Image (cartoon, one colour):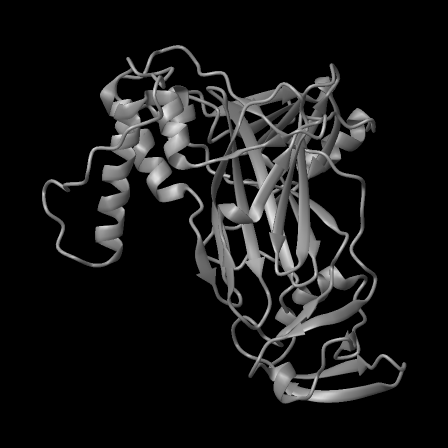
Length: 394
């Protein structure tokens, strides 16, 4: 999840920002420990793909590739990615009958064109901004969610991967949210957010930025001044930051205009990616539900949860000595606090670990002594939104 500019004075160095550090509450995914299914039961076969041309059907099981049986269904994409273009795949039908098929894999994605059913698996990860995320799977869909709270708003970045062979309609209207007590939380529009923060000024700035974006997306000639009707908020809405620097409000309007999730049609292999917004609640965790084509995907976000596990200092040192620069890691410190960041280096003299923290303010590095670390675990990096993010597409 990219951190919205509205959160940022210490993060983006905008003109006119106050010098003090903005307090951001980073949310952590709450989920039960789960594992991917052992077998790849095929839930979708992409039209005109190598699998489709070879006669592979939904409901069958992909047992092996070139004789290699995967440890579980989630590692099949890696096996297929590393395979030679001409491959032998073993397929088992619902009756238990096995057959071998010779296929010519595509050079690019999808190489084979099958989608494993990973329903029930919840996969932890980390975004480019250093926020913990969770990816949940249901049928041919995968949803990734991460969140933060600032200025009375919950900002949640969501990504939905469409691994069917048809387009789907998807947008903020597909979501609902609930707090710890089960109370429904309204999904706010970008205009609601700008009204809450800046009042009428914010609403009008947002409409200007949206019009400018629409004009540019349409490849039309862009006038120096885009004329749009004056936008207004509900009566009585002033905006808690109405007196802040105008440049700050304009930058936030620009961000919401470009990064908010908008209703659209998403074709096979594409990713819906954007921000949705909720009013802050004291009743954490928040449960986010996405309804798509009869499937419901749930992500629960709350206070960061420290791991109960503990690792010996000697084992921690061995772990950090083998890490590659940029590897996203999650630390549980001795006092129970949680830190997520990208590994930078390990100093064996001081036994200190250094991290890059791209969203951590003007000081973009952080370090911890090994003696202060209780547990460490690697996380998967969430790829950019321009590429398919779901690893259930083979």
